Every structure is written in C-alpha cells, then in structure tokens.
Image 1 (cartoon, rainbow, N blue to C red):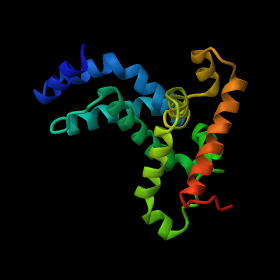
Image 2 (image 1 turned 180 degrees about the vertical axis):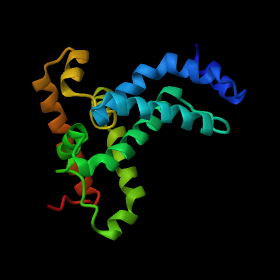
Image 3 (image 1 turned 60 degrees about the vertical axis):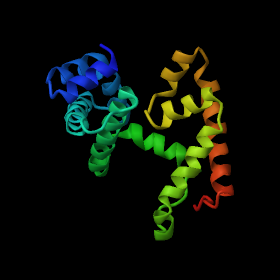
Image 4 (image 1 turned 30 degrees about the vertical axis):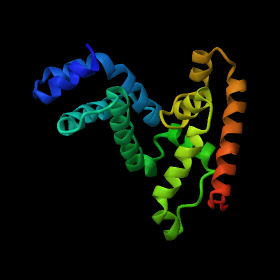
Length: 187
C-alpha cells in the first residue's frame, strides 16, 4: 500500500492504518530499534510504542516521508529505553556508536554549550549537507540508524575495513567542522 493511502487511513482513524504500517515498515523499524538496543524483545516494544505515537500524531501531522517519520519515532523510543537501561549496561551497541563519535562531539557539561544545541544541530546539518550523498547516507546509517559496519559493507559491496576507514575520515571531518564552528573537542 502506498504511504499516502496509509496516511489517509490514519486520518480516517481506521485501525487498518496500524496493520498496513506494520506490514510495510515493521521489519525496518524493528531493525532500527534492534540496532540501538540489541534485544529483540525490547525492539518489539519500541516498535509497538512507535505505532501508538504515530496514531497520536497523525492527524494533525502529515509526514513528508512516512518511512523516516516512523524510523524517527522508533529510534527516539529505543534511545529512551537505552538511556533507562544504561545504568544496567545492557545495550553495548549504542555504547560503541557513542564511543566512536566521542572524539568529535563537544562536551555537554558546559551549560552555555547546552543552550547552543540548536546552533550545534544546524552546524552538523550543514556538514551533512556538504557531504556527497553516498557519504551522508553511510554516516546516517551508521550513527543515526545504528547499522553494523559488517551489514553496511555487505549492502555496499565494500569491505568492512574500507567502510571503517571511510567512517574514520568522516568523523575526523565532522570534528574539524565542529572545531571551525566554535565547538572544540574537550577531553
């Protein structure tokens, strides 16, 4: 079913919207949540929560991309769950992703830096926009959707080592852009 038809079902408050959403995007959203959490059971709960949030938000919201909208809802729920379970050290996957990015992101302990969050997001968006499409997609697949390098390599036909090197260069490029934008890395 086309996304526009699914959205019309949401607007009609037809419960078939949830069934169609599950049929079209269930596996994809479970993978997004699983990449963050590492637990199939927790991922399933996050997807279920995402469907509930979609039901609450549509209408009045009309997503430009239903796939991206659902992925964001799922990822946000998974990150909330990850943060809640972080003290228990249950989700090593997200720890790894954050540790890869920690050398280029500024420290969040400075209240002034926290207040400049929108400016930082704009700077990162600009950096992403300046990348070639292939690099931008790779970066987002790895650090937004949490895809494993091994899976990205398989999907791209490149070796994991090649992609790891490319990701390292991208992180260095992000770090440089952030430093030039006034966000130096503080150890």
